[in-house]
Image (cartoon, rainbow, N blue to C red; front, side, top):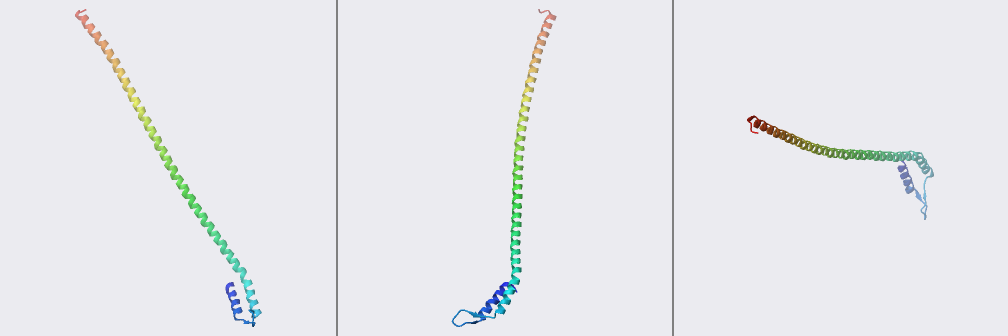
Amino acid sequence: MDVLKLVDEIEDLIESGGSVPFTKKVMIDSDEILDIIKEIRLRLPDEIKQASWIKEEKQRILADAQNDADNILNDAEYKLEELIEGESITKIAQERAKEIIEKAQNNAKEIRLGAMEYADSLLLETQENLKEVIILLNDNRKELRGDN
């Protein structure tokens, strides 16, 4: 029997007891009431222990649930940071790659322009040398013909 049933039994005894005329007092068998009270005293510590255990278990379950929720939240934040960081690294790498390509294109353009200038200067020098050779050839031909 649990404590609540024993309390119900006390109520039944009081309700079924004989009443004293002109008062609200009831006559009941004191031995029956004392037996029920002793039984309540014996059972009460067990029920208090059980209620205390239930309360502790509830607290433990809530703490575990909170820890699980915190872990899930921390994992989600960590993964979000990884994604953001990964995106940032990718963006930085793409910008750096773009800079390197632009620099390489500018260097190639400068090299191409330098090569063209060098080739033009070589052609100009060759042209001047050829002019001198042609003049020398013309002079030699005139000399051979005696056109001096």
